[in-house]
Image (tube, rainbow, N blue to C red; front, side, top):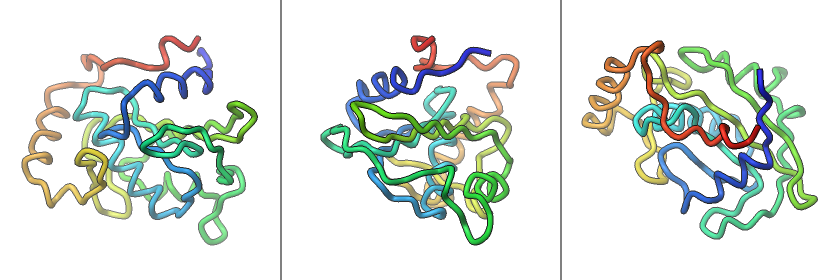
Length: 173
């Protein structure tokens, strides 16, 4: 298995004009609930847009794409007495393999969370499905046309026949 180089991935993500259905930038927001809802929205949005992954990036100022660094440390983050990553995976339906990638860019601490696109069904967090409408996170049930489109995309593309979109990781090896 090849290893993703987070510095190259970040460079590719920063080429995207701004937040979208499958990318979100944060500076330091480490609320477990915000992260869980965003994981659901980005996973569902990635599937809708034909992307293999969604990305939540800490350390980037939204709008300007300035690299500011972050104080968020996923390896130390907890929800109650439980490690954040374990709590997140347990709170998602279906469960998925999330990958936190802490690294330094320009001497500043950064974190990228790589989120697989929804596969067999929309991804729920705490029993609720989310979607991004542009750069805003909303409950999927408030957008029935998006829900219908998502289900059509999921039903059309089986795991074996899925044609992933631009995999930004391909250029990083």
